Length: 172
Image (tube, rainbow, N blue to C red; front, side, top):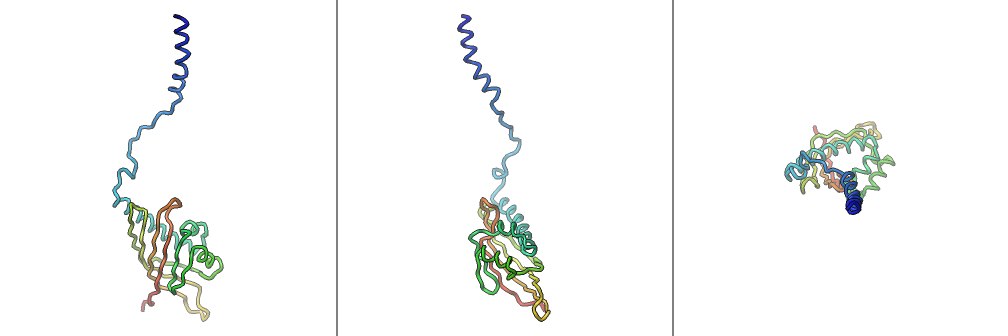
């Protein structure tokens, strides 16, 4: 009898050890955001986030923050300038590095973001004023643009996949 009890105790020891070391599950007091938010709410949150990122991207273009720009633009970017010239990500960023695209200041006149697909796709349209170094004759080099951009949210975060702009006449 003593042997049976001792054998039973030895068999039970591993079970007690496992029970004591097993991680306890945390009690969830709140649901995950994706479970409680509607697609419309996710789209609204995405629109706010993308608007902020658009403003940051313009600032990064002025300050030549290449680390930010590398993340902001998708590898398959199609960037269409107001003059119709198209570039991919590598060529566009190289143009900034080489001084072909120089931005002294970019003012956002207005911006409108519409998000879709549960906050994973955004279409942006707006107006900006770009201030570049003065022309050779010393006159200001200012461009008023209307633009459209498409951003997608992927594993890298939000990225611009399309940019297209159109030059507007100067306000008189």
